[in-house]
Amino acid sequence: MSKGGDDTVAWTKPLKGIRAVLRPIVRLCLRRATTIQDFVRVAKAVFLEVAEEELRLRGDKVNISRLSVLTGIDRKEIMRLNSEGQPELEEPGSLYGRVMAMWRHSRRFQTKSGAPRVLTLEGDDSEFRELVRLVSASISPGTVLYELEKLGQVQRTKNGLKLLRDAAPLATDHYKGDLLLGSEIETLSDTIEENVKRDTAVGHHQLRTEYDNILQRELPQIRMWFLEEGKLFHRRVREFLSKFDLDVSPRKNEEKAGAKVVFSSFSWTTEAEEPEDEIL
Image 1 (tube, one colour):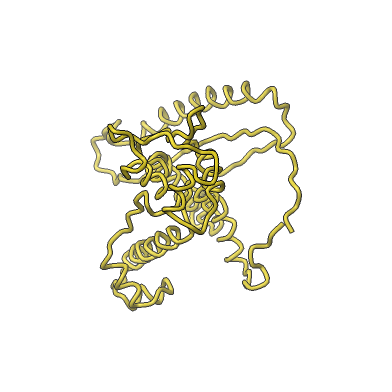
Image 2: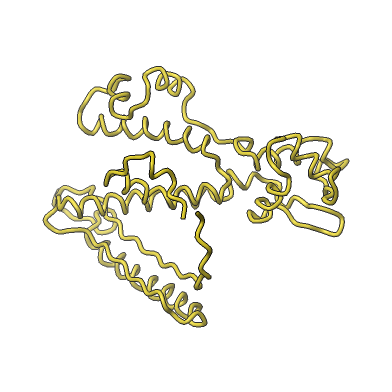
């Protein structure tokens, strides 16, 4: 298996931990066809955003010098990023997005009504190859086709290759899901950190149950059981918490409220995967 640069990086425990956290994020980026360039742009903006929040929480004054020390980002780069505002990852930000954008918006690849045309696919002079080469001459049209098919953006027909969606799926289809994922990650991160630090007299609920030799034919039944039991338990949680929430159960005495309680749950099942050859 590729070590991903282990020979050149001092993998301290904190960096190993960050690496473990980043793996599912990077996998998500690859599935969204998000490039490392887009990731770095967003990461810099988030570093500055969170660093500013942390400074304010500590009661410190926020300035470029402190942001630079805290994040490691050069002062000039911070000023440039601040002048740009939050990055907007539009569809042309990735190669696949640019290919689909040209397919939708260039008259060369549209029907008379302005819809994306079904493109010829066979041969070195196919319309799809022409489309890809107009966007980038450094990548194989076959590679682009493979990725677009895996992402569910195109379909082969008897007349050629059809673009399936008119929206910008790489940028927006999963947007709400990603927002939910970000919220879940932040809550779980806070939970684990407080449990490790033992900052509270009573720890937070954090459990994981995993079995790895389940009968595959039983997965549908197991998923259904999780769904039904999860609904029932969350109903019990809501009934319990509602007793202490002043919006739901007002009290005459003026006790201090405003505390936030989160109870989240999810399940995941997957069929057994065949072992792959090790990449040297």
